[in-house]
Image 1 (cartoon, rainbow, N blue to C red):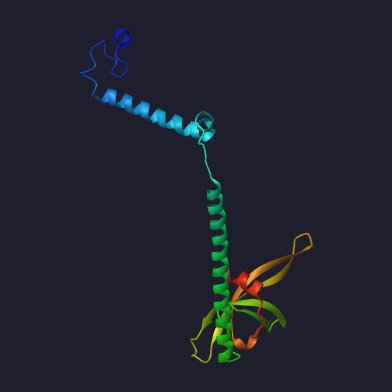
Image 2 (cartoon, one colour):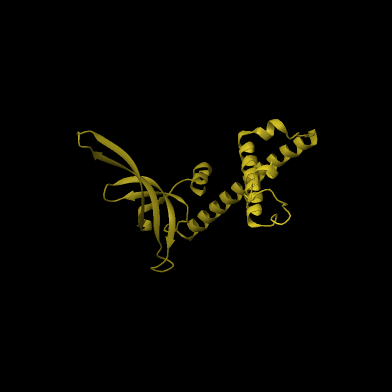
Length: 188
């Protein structure tokens, strides 16, 4: 066909291509073909055409299934070990803080916070321990959830829960009994 109508790439009249095969027009034609082939392959893969034309046969033995279940069991065991280590470390830190005295709390320890303005007591978590005033006078950064009630334009009231982070002194904090599940939620 190219002998009759000319070279497709260089649009020259019919000729011997050995002279122009390395020219930029032929290289461009070759690159265009490669790009089209890549695009077709990606499209065919995306629509699942390759799965129909050449399906991958999976030969899994019962040993492979056993290996998978062992891997899952080991992963579960590793997660439980990690959880256990973190909970044990937190419990140890809380006990060490308690041994130092009633004013001392550990980071990530669950506590009760007394808000003197509202005289309300709520659950909180220690997120920071500060010793700026000396090693025997700590103060703490805590987080707790506070319910806020606001009146809307139509007169109805809307209650929202907001997370509050603030600094406080140890006199407003008290210990709560150790609860593994609640402590784990804080540690996550």
